Image (tube, rainbow over all chains, first blue to last red):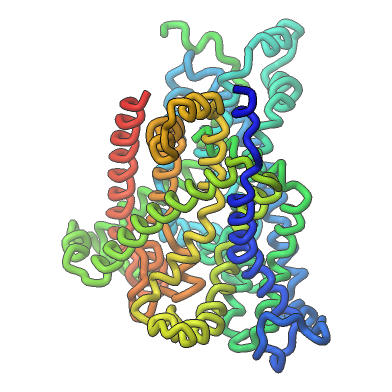
Length: 278
Length: 291
């Protein structure tokens, strides 16, 4: 029995997975890096490492797409959407989770928000864009605001599942000590939400940083565009200057690669927790 | 229920009402507006009048729309099958007794982090410049030209979509597989169960809920396919790879078909609701059977 428990490492599978990782994941990434570092004359042997690294590709792409501007646009959208999503959406979910049983109003809100999950963005996008134009929220501030509002159904669902399982005794103790609902939420509940905040935070970050459709339809002015959108907008101007294009793609990928490298375990854990709850 | 308001502090109402109102104004209201416009002939500018069900009747005889629906379903079904087969295999591999488990897991999850658009652009280059010489050398006619410019463009878009979606679904299967007690396998080993039988009778029933999640999420996501198409083919060649989402975007914003595409969007919404409900119903039934 005991011998069967300790099975040997399966080297066949390890090897197969390593080969797959190299061919499917590293090769496209290596290609992106190597093209970004070359000049057009070296493109005949695409996979070969460049003889002289062409840093100029990056500075040209940097100027062409106004990288700092696009980066900070995306950065601002992501950071503000993240902060306000965590605070407002968890607060809504908390009030709903704690009062659903007692009140038809809160119960109705729960079903209202959850059923909105079934409405895909492209179904309301045409009228929304008209509305956004009229209200002049077709800009960075407006899109940030829309991310916070549109995340509500999904996040209410995620938070609600988590809050439901929290014991109410801590809150009751705080109420007896004279705390009002705001204090209970910010001092007692919010700190307890850290694991689910991580999940919601990561999902919001990924969504707002990588989103293409909402910026495409809402951010028409060049100075408002995000990193993803600018790649699309400049696609025509890169034309066949692949080195320039790939330098630009690489610069757009680097921030998220850095984040992933630093917080990889945390990201995988958070996303798994969120997905399994769905 | 009589004393239902008594126990609820006013603060709780303040917590929910502003956000819910904003949600109504920016989500529910545009949705109903879209439904309303679908009964008009508005181009997106200028005058309009009510036309009743004319848009809806027109939709069913519009080759552009029926082609977009056909392609979207074809694409979503294929992508869902391929992603689930490969991600389950990958998850089984990652769950086996292997070395560098966490590193490999992190590497295979990487594509999920990357923006769809840029991934699409990188693969554009691969399809246009790297694959044709290889295709020629191997004598495969369909690969010796840029696949995205041919009748097989869908296969290119499909490949990239699957490549990117594997990561997330693998992660879900993996977390399912990790809930399975290893003793169960050992008991099966003692009984001399073959690998396939072991998978069919033990592994799969135990990860059935994760299979349900994956199928539901996949179908929903792939029916919305937009980014990859915009990055790789723009819906072409011709309208070959135009999905419903791409059609709504292109014709609704640029084709002066605001009202008409609103009707298309409403129809799409109904289709998605029907599919989601059907899936939840069927898959939950099936899960119950396994339990």
